[in-house]
Length: 461
Image 1 (cartoon, rainbow, N blue to C red):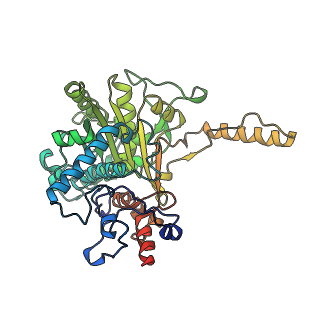
Image 2 (image 1 turned 30 degrees about the vertical axis):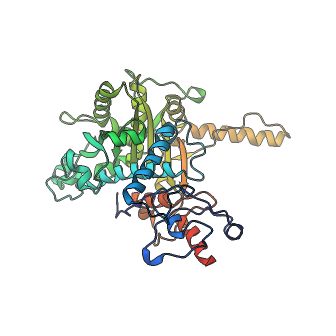
Image 3 (image 1 turned 30 degrees about the horizontal axis):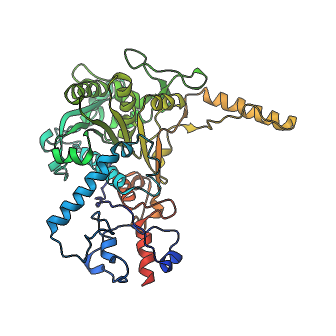
């Protein structure tokens, strides 16, 4: 369930100072951009760019003639910065979408990738803000706004995208008869969970280097969605039509969490399943835009992250001409077994999992066993016997319906590394706002937070 959001600030790429004195004092850190209030401006040595410039949230090339001390007009600076951003994103957009599994972009975190992650996180935030959480409202569990005004009413104007399809998820749980006497919100079977949006703005298409289609999905909100989350045993993916799949290691079949699959594939006489809605809309968009550079970005938080992973698997299984499909997952739980992961990778879907180490949801359901089982171990008879017994135990465990596998590439963050986050608990560690704050401030594994670098530098003066 979503709690209060922390509004993210504009992200910027990291810069590094080359002074020996500072290097010796903060050798573990890379100085990065972070906004400061005017009252907190600090004088810096004349031999280097100003402190305000280094911490300015606007992306600026520090080695170009355009600097904080240059009296150029605001419009010229904005135009130049925009042109620089267009070149970098257009040229490498497939890398930012994960075609090379984000190699070299995560540690330290690339500035363009940071901005893209936060941008997609804001699309998920809009799905939360547009959802009617009030159980006493006659429009409970629906979208509060028309498609054309969702972004404006959610504090996200000027995206360049237009929502083309509302999405609903339906629980497949068979409700008891007594549920009719309970409040209506208890038995809400189908609810609005997000949307499909298409980039329509020419300038944004130019910046991205392609037309982008976004599927944004919120996290758990209704009573039956919570109940579906508790159905944590693995179940086989339904075979049929074009969604064929092959067995993984030792011929095992792909399996996914029962509750997630239920919410993705269940429907009613009046409401199609989430799977059917997504298939129909993606099919239509492929017919409309299939001849131009196209990307599909499926993003979600918590339950939405799990459903985003299922959607990517389904889309790549269903459409022969499916574009590059990328999942940006915030605080997502585990979804399927090792064979599911193997098939997802084989189909070409790319998954970037943003994980907070303190977030319990990312560690459930089930458990993970070592993929590299030792089959032949040299050594004394006692050592061989122990290894064989371990293999036997692991095989018995894998026969249960509780063994999951992590998917995709992981960007691991930690609430503990941010001095700006206090009184953290299970709920706040899982909150989408916390995730966007951590992404905004993450620098690298050695220096995980911008605020840390800023405070260390302030001690120098």
